[in-house]
Length: 84
Image (tube, rainbow, N blue to C red; front, side):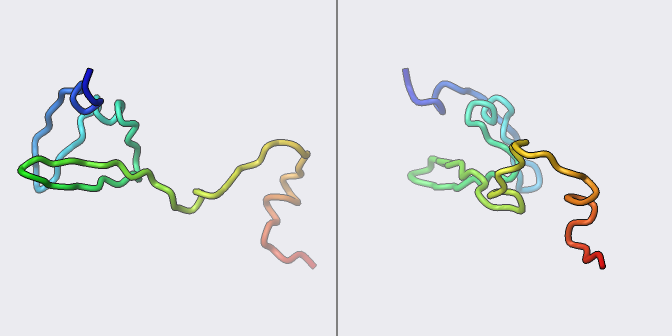
Protein backbone atom coordinates (compact mmCIF):
# COMPACT_ATOMS: atom_id res chain seq x y z
CA UNK A 1 0.00 0.00 0.00
CA UNK A 2 1.14 3.61 -0.62
CA UNK A 3 2.06 6.41 1.72
CA UNK A 4 -0.48 7.92 4.14
CA UNK A 5 -1.12 10.90 1.82
CA UNK A 6 -2.09 8.49 -0.95
CA UNK A 7 -4.53 6.62 1.31
CA UNK A 8 -6.45 9.68 2.51
CA UNK A 9 -8.59 11.27 -0.18
CA UNK A 10 -10.17 14.64 0.56
CA UNK A 11 -10.48 18.07 -0.96
CA UNK A 12 -11.14 21.62 0.18
CA UNK A 13 -11.96 24.93 -1.47
CA UNK A 14 -9.75 28.02 -1.47
CA UNK A 15 -11.55 31.06 -0.07
CA UNK A 16 -9.90 34.44 0.37
CA UNK A 17 -6.42 32.98 -0.23
CA UNK A 18 -7.01 30.41 2.52
CA UNK A 19 -7.80 26.73 2.38
CA UNK A 20 -9.11 24.53 5.16
CA UNK A 21 -7.40 21.25 5.91
CA UNK A 22 -10.08 18.56 5.77
CA UNK A 23 -10.78 16.92 9.15
CA UNK A 24 -9.91 13.51 7.79
CA UNK A 25 -6.39 14.71 6.89
CA UNK A 26 -5.95 16.59 10.19
CA UNK A 27 -6.78 13.38 12.07
CA UNK A 28 -4.55 11.21 9.88
CA UNK A 29 -1.56 13.53 10.35
CA UNK A 30 -2.45 14.61 13.92
CA UNK A 31 -2.37 18.30 12.94
CA UNK A 32 -3.30 20.55 15.86
CA UNK A 33 -3.74 24.27 16.58
CA UNK A 34 -0.39 26.05 16.56
CA UNK A 35 1.30 23.59 14.20
CA UNK A 36 2.89 25.10 11.11
CA UNK A 37 2.70 23.85 7.55
CA UNK A 38 5.86 24.01 5.41
CA UNK A 39 4.99 24.16 1.69
CA UNK A 40 7.20 22.91 -1.15
CA UNK A 41 6.33 23.14 -4.85
CA UNK A 42 8.07 20.90 -7.35
CA UNK A 43 7.01 20.19 -10.94
CA UNK A 44 3.44 21.39 -10.33
CA UNK A 45 3.01 19.21 -7.22
CA UNK A 46 2.61 20.64 -3.71
CA UNK A 47 4.14 18.83 -0.75
CA UNK A 48 3.27 19.95 2.76
CA UNK A 49 5.25 19.07 5.87
CA UNK A 50 3.68 19.44 9.32
CA UNK A 51 5.98 21.22 11.77
CA UNK A 52 4.77 20.61 15.32
CA UNK A 53 4.51 23.58 17.67
CA UNK A 54 7.56 23.48 19.93
CA UNK A 55 7.47 26.86 21.61
CA UNK A 56 5.01 28.79 23.65
CA UNK A 57 4.31 29.89 27.17
CA UNK A 58 3.92 26.36 28.54
CA UNK A 59 5.95 24.36 25.98
CA UNK A 60 8.65 23.46 28.52
CA UNK A 61 6.34 23.19 31.54
CA UNK A 62 6.43 19.73 33.10
CA UNK A 63 3.42 20.39 35.32
CA UNK A 64 2.80 19.36 38.90
CA UNK A 65 3.10 15.64 39.51
CA UNK A 66 1.22 15.71 42.84
CA UNK A 67 4.17 14.34 44.82
CA UNK A 68 3.88 16.86 47.63
CA UNK A 69 0.98 18.56 49.36
CA UNK A 70 0.43 22.27 48.67
CA UNK A 71 -1.41 25.08 50.41
CA UNK A 72 -3.29 27.21 47.88
CA UNK A 73 -3.00 30.40 49.96
CA UNK A 74 0.73 30.18 50.40
CA UNK A 75 1.70 28.42 47.20
CA UNK A 76 -0.66 30.01 44.69
CA UNK A 77 -2.57 33.11 45.75
CA UNK A 78 0.44 34.78 47.33
CA UNK A 79 2.96 33.72 44.67
CA UNK A 80 4.99 36.67 43.50
CA UNK A 81 3.57 38.98 46.16
CA UNK A 82 5.90 40.24 48.85
CA UNK A 83 4.15 39.86 52.20
CA UNK A 84 5.73 41.76 55.10
